[in-house]
Amino acid sequence: MQSRARTVLAGIAASAVIAGATVTGAFAQSPYEGEDVTLIIPNSPAGLMSQYAHTLAPHIAENLGARNVRVVNHQGGGGLKGSNILWESDPDGMTFAMTNVPTLLVAQLAESPGVQFNATDFTYLGRVQADPRLMFTGKPSGLKTIEDVRNLDRPFVFASQGTDEDFYTMVVLADALGYDLKIVTGYEGDADTSLAVIRGDADGHMTTWTQSAPAVEAGDKYAVLATTFERYEGAPDVPTALEIIEDPKQKENMQAISSILVLGRGFFGPPDMDPEATEALRAAIEKTLTDPEVLKEMKEKGLPVSFNSADAQKENVDRVFANGKNLTPMFKEAVTKIQ
Image (cartoon, rainbow, N blue to C red; front, side, top):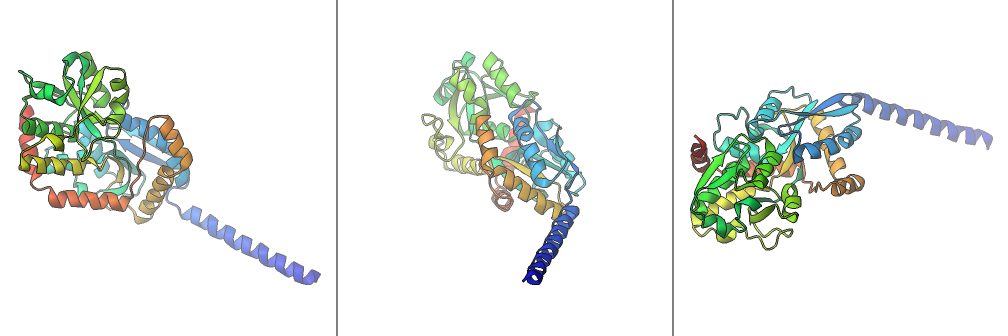
């Protein structure tokens, strides 16, 4: 009996050693174990994107087994500067980025000279959030509804941070709804354009509900138009552009833009990223964005999450480019508005 017990214990011990060796081997083969990883944010250090990044980075590092995920801002060109830097990064998986994916798509569709990448070739890693984008006006403008904007007897002054998705959306809306537009560029991110609108330096801007909700609640800004397919539940009295636009061709263009905007904030890496690193990073991001404790923390900080897989992200990007050729002339025309 004792002999049999010793045999069983020896077998268990041997299995534990083998299992331990297997686990140790798996960690040893991980491309991220003990490494410093860089997360590029092509946006302002003071903006919402950076808030997301700094909150999520420690959790992603833990789930990767990395020593650190370091957030680095490379702002400029409406998100293009940092995206171009990522495009040229080593595809070993030690550098990835997060931004508004629609920015990449509309810039490429517009054939912007600042684009040095092919958005379909990035390695997509998962969506963080698709926050509804709305048109907001400032209290000093006296414009409380989209009808007030349409009835202006002067150009609507639009604060823009560059030729990003908000820029193109606003130009299309002005054309479709029949109001003149004066574009003021050079602002650094949503926080900067928001301040300009609140101070009265500009009439309005395009941004996310999350970014502007506090100012709306304080009475400093008004939400006047949504770019969503249906009215946003957080602002049920605000009409959608698709409700108001009457011309069929203009409505079709707006539907295409709304499809782009739903891609939201997302993680992505350089093209042809190392397969093992890609798999590990996608898994770590999904684990982070579906962790109840992380989601609780994000909610407490006012940073909503609506995770979508890397595969779905890539499918949506491919679909936009397959169906978005008609947008190119319109977007190219939009750029001439600031030249």
